[in-house]
Image (tube, rainbow, N blue to C red; front, side):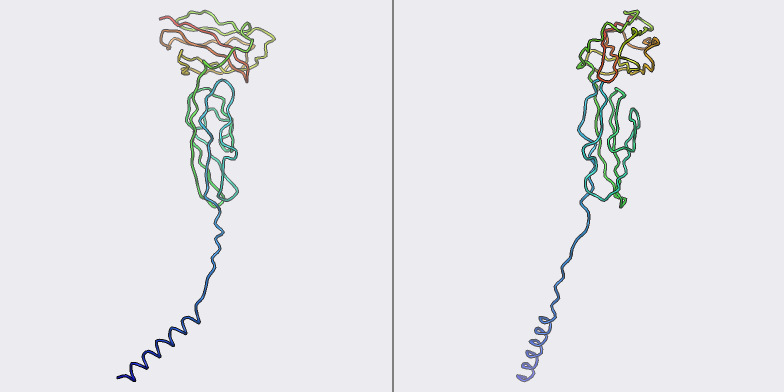
Length: 207
C-alpha cells in the first residue's frame, strides 16, 4: 500500500513538472478602430443667417471612408455632406445617420429653433414697402431699386418670435404678393432676409 501511494505521488509530481515546463504565454494585440461617434452639432437658433450643421469633425472614430445622410432634406443644400447648410427659417429637427467603411453606423440629431425678434435692423428699412397694412386678405411687398437685396426669404412670426410662415422672394425686382387670409387676426412681425441683411416690419391682420 505504501509503495502504491509513493508511486502515485511520484506520478503527480512528474505531471506537475511537465505542465510547468510547457506553459505557453500569449500576447494579443487588438487592431480594432475606436468606436464610431456621430456629432450633428449643438442645437442652434435661426436668426435670418444660414446655419452650418454638424460638428468639426462630424465623424469621430470608426474607419474611413464615412458616408453621411441628413434627414429630412427640407432647407438643406446637401444631405450627403458632413456639414450641410440650412437656410429655410422654420423650426426643424434634423437627424444624422453616419456610416463608416466597415458598415458600422451611428446617429445623432440637432434642433433648429427660430427667433426672428432677435434680428436687428440693418439700415435698409427705407427700401421696403409693405401695403396695404393693416390688411385682411393679402399684402404686397415691393423693394426699391438699387437695393442690396436680389433674392430673399420672407418670414412672418408672431410677437413671441414663433415662425408661422416662410416664403421665398426669388427676385426682388418684382413685387411679392402674400396671401394672409388664413392667418388669425392680430399683430405680426414680417422680416425680409438676405444673408446678413434684414428688414423688419410690424404688420396687422384684421378679420
